Length: 224
Ligand code: DX5
Ligand code: ZN
Image (cartoon, rainbow, N blue to C red):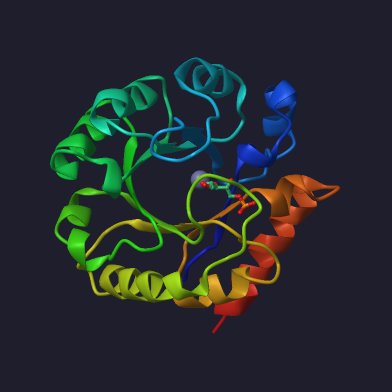
């Protein structure tokens, strides 16, 4: 099956005073990535459920919520209930079995995502991932936009791609952190389906053109 690279611009690099306009500027994107940070799981604080609900009400693009928060069992289902398309929690933050949380997210109508920090091995979650729809491989330490891509995480992407292609897993492989024109080809070759890009999209004069450019570049990199 040919892969079609997809782009999820991260609102972390958008103008927070104009979130409705900022989602309208990326109407051609596949998902819009919303980084929820609680200043506990990561050393930064962004926005929470009320603001995500407001974004959901106006966004022309399905919401991809990346929850960088402690106690995801308590907080994550609300994001599924408000209508987010995909809700991703961090494996490192789960206190119980992440599969129970995946079940709750799916029951509330969302896709369930599991995120791994750069140092977290994929092998520890192979069984668990069978119950997830999305694997988010972090290619920077979570917390801030505009950091440099960590190519050492591509081994995890390659292994996840292999497991999906051989039918052992059934999920989208997503990457987050430092994706731009210099790094997207290596990520595409390794097997990424969904590319999060914050500064590379919102830092561009024309975000729509940046999305199209990144998507085409990734497609060329995997063309037979
Ligand atoms: C970082 C966030 C990312 C961030 C990516 O913790 O999870 O989604 O917005 O930003 P760039 O693409 O600028 O690295
Ligand atoms: Zn993110």
